Length: 112
Length: 115
Image 1 (cartoon, chains in turn blue, yellow):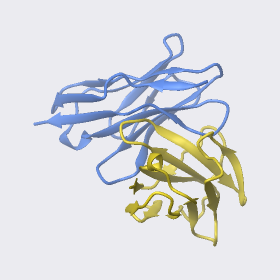
Image 2: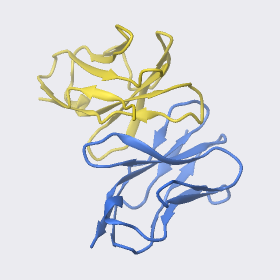
Image 3: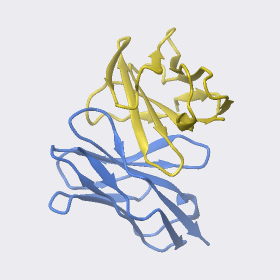
């Protein structure tokens, strides 16, 4: 069985502060890993994904995530957040098929 | 930018009634998916669909559920006889090519409430 754990359901931070959203996974097969973001009243949008190669992947809006196989983690980081980053962030994996297995999500609130 | 759309945004129904949730995937996409999220729980995979056939389905997707691509643009999820526990947000997704690693593009969801 495969699973994704996002331990933090809510993360409040101040604008321009760094943030880390944690994601751990469990799988008996090799995985692809994804971070999706959901802004209010919108669908889930792909933020970044790890398929192979460099373990550090970046998004166009300054987020990055590092695949750590030994720790089975794929934490999402941003060195300086903006108010517009307020959203819910979902970590997900694909194991032996194309279905996505999601974590419960982390609500990031960026305060002025 | 092309996007997946879903209708209705909200639906309230009585237990035992049939509901049809509609999705318009991105126009050149060939692979389609339904997921759902019960309040406070994880987003769960329901079914994947390609070439007018179900590719994969989860244990949740029992005989009460069916999917259809009735024309060249719509993709529907039907629940024949709704139960209270079917109350959830239902997300449709599509991708241009299936398989692991391909990006799935999600719609905004339909919130279904079964009374």
